[in-house]
Image (cartoon, rainbow, N blue to C red; front, side):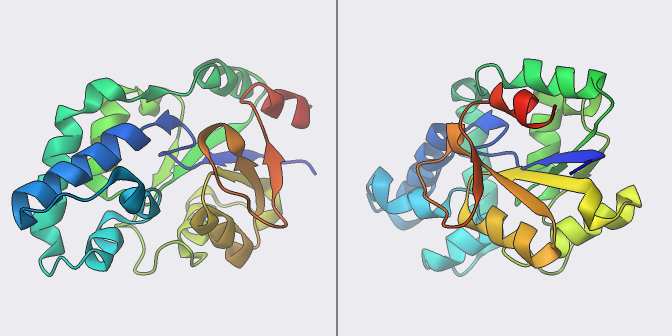
Length: 205
């Protein structure tokens, strides 16, 4: 398949941010609900829209909780970085002529924060966040929005993600998908996998 655009999820695909995100959620629950929740019990929220995870945890005012959560994520930014070797792969893909983009479950100000810290603007021309569509992953709408902005056919795009929501989003949009195993502990039945960032260069030869 001849792809023109390689599209990345952010959390768990581009950035190793699980520890910072889940630890921040524990702190949020501690502040707003005065409860202690084990780390493992909160991992289901990683990779889905923040307000969706907060609603599942029983927060009625998800806007307020999201602001508190992001306050703690900002405090924990020192824990976050590119996955090892991935930035070099992104640079090489750009040199090979691929257009690179992002489709993420983050809201606009969350993406904006990391876009500045990790210089996403240098590498990714189009970035779609959960504020850009009324329906979010696992619906295909975010990727369909990307296709519209890029003015490309679905066959010309490849999406990399680490969660079932990413996989279903791609499938519902009719876009090819690769499961980025370097940031995932999940098994996604039927999904093609790529184990290490550098393996992507071989796949896309």
